[in-house]
Length: 171
Figure 1 (cartoon, one colour):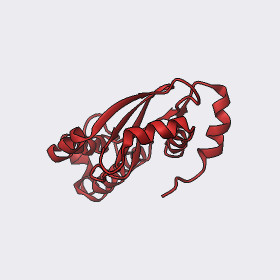
Figure 2 (cartoon, rainbow, N blue to C red; figure 1 turned 90 degrees about the horizontal axis):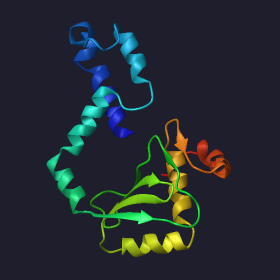
Figure 3 (spheres, rainbow, N blue to C red; figure 1 turned 90 degrees about the vertical axis):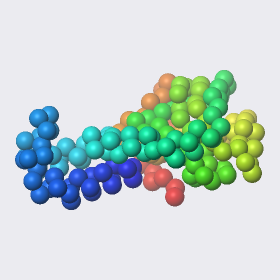
Figure 4 (tube, helix red, strand yellow; figure 1 turned 120 degrees about the horizontal axis):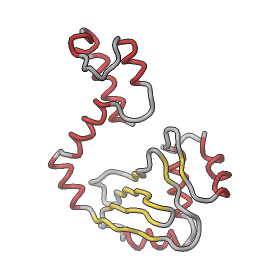
């Protein structure tokens, strides 16, 4: 995750590295070495969460996100949707005409946030779901971008998860 990497770099090379003791908060590790070890744990660090909060509260980003189309998509038949500890699927950027974000919500629903411009994204999603390729592609992305955990509802999905667990995501 780019945000987390930048946050770690900022913390490890900033004032904190020079004088950890005077900047240390009561709930943080006693030494800078222990603090660095804690940064290697999965998930967002406190600083990473603050950076993410600043992005979310960034007015131009918020306006762009709110200008996109939001749709709750229900899938009744077929493959159940998988989620993970990093469930957000991103295709291109928020300003791209075919920019798309997907967030699995349940085994049968996901949130689609997209720009409806050159491509009729609603129709494209519906067509690809009907063709049986959309949910599989979304599940593959979710498995490949997980940190540690993947969640599904059917034991039969384990073979799918194993197949893509160690496969590097496509660029």
